[in-house]
Length: 164
Image 1 (spheres, rainbow, N blue to C red):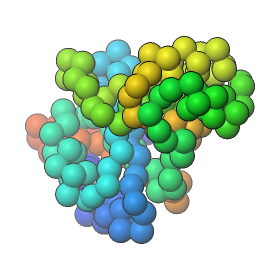
Image 2: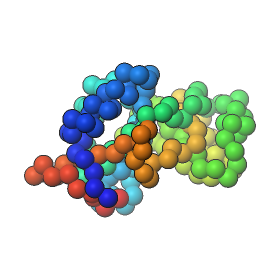
Image 3: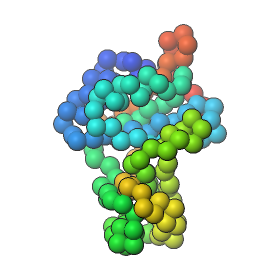
Image 4: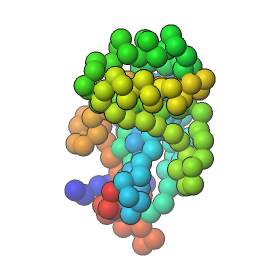
């Protein structure tokens, strides 16, 4: 698959437009040559998005979602876990991200994904007391009118797919 560079004016213009029309957007960042490592970040301003994209390593792929994602928000406690289990159907893939960023090596956020209520309960227990956003795992494999992707160019300014 071929991607535009994250510096592309059309890509950046689309992200900026989406952020003007929404309170926040979710971005999935996949790191090349990193054994499948990825992170999710919520952005509330174009400046924050732009700054973050300039700090990413070469060949990182950034996928941005136009539609609001992860609608269940709150601090993890028993009531929050119960709400999540009622809202997310058992057997469908979910995503949980902590809203307060933690550093794990070069990865700076913490997320969980799974498909069963047992996994969801366990993942939420690991986040107990932390503010999280959760919901169904966003559809990211194909770019659409509501999902766009771009790649951080290499040291020569060339945008090419990495190994994710």
